[in-house]
Length: 454
Ligand SMILES: Cc1ncc(COP(=O)(O)O)c(C=O)c1O
Image 1 (cartoon, rainbow, N blue to C red):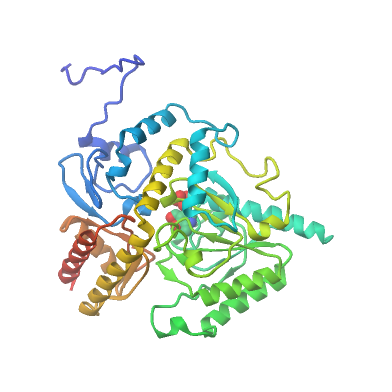
Image 2 (cartoon, rainbow, N blue to C red):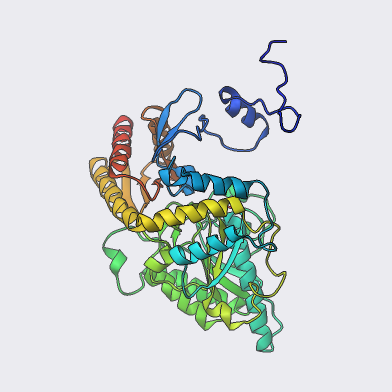
């Protein structure tokens, strides 16, 4: 046995220390752990802005994906490298408290900072949990509970047990959300699901029709479908859930005029509205896309860029005093989110506030969209529909196979990482702190990629 092969023993615990090395981390994970791993081993100590480094050979990539849009300050932000912050992380990391039942100053500071920086006054109730899917599912539970109580008040025995939702929606892939998600069939095939009412989602491409005052014909069709569902199941439909901009479905933009019409209809039928902002939160040039679109949801599910997932509730939820946020044991989990995430999220929100990063990201989004529009003019036979709100920007490929090829070429040849979106689109998800030169560099890589393809 060589010295290297000898079992290393951890001094503190006297058990074998893990021996995974950078060189075989990808292979070792692929062998036993479910995932879709890129051939990169992330160097957590390096990285700067949009640059991510491969620990194996130091290879550098320009990252427009940000861990599926969940790293709002990019890699190695100096605000997350201060001694006081690192000490706070270590303190919160030694044990994982059950936040719903045991108060800590760290959780209280997080809640206070969250409300100050991204809070919505009309949505004062907060619930935290791990994972965007569970955030959405708990918003649904609040709605089911609410609707059943509203029905009972009116002497109606029906339970709130159905969810009105959109075609091409993605809300997660477990439990209730599986019945709502309808993007890639592989994600839902053969699993048991509820038969909940689904209506068309009339995404509108940028252009003249966007500002039409009246409902467009396809929007009227979708609204009629919502009316029909409400006529049939009105007493059972607890809520309408929507992504303000459909992300996984392909960066599909719905007009506020349409979403407001559905919202109005829901109010008439005692149906709550739930904005799923798991993807759009802290991405569209301000904290919440629903605000930018002039919508007034009763519940907002969040996650990803906020680090801690959860639900904000208010408006009509407050009409029921013992709503599920308030009545004991209606919604909860052991950990209620991770305290380490809360410490990190608190610091991130402080940096966002101090550096006015929502406004910065709005400006950077304009730059990115302008660059993508130029690309669409240069390569009209390859791409179309450059679109975006804030940093949530995308283009569509005329040939879906070319989209996949483009992402591979950009990664392998130009060391730039992009994400697919829906069946035929490519999405950019840079951090709020992205610099103009990083955007220009990413678009240059995309331009070269498209030239190679063309
Ligand atoms: C709109 C939306 N809702 C819910 C989810 C599920 O979040 P998670 O993967 O954290 O469970 C996602 C994930 O991409 C999402 O985009």
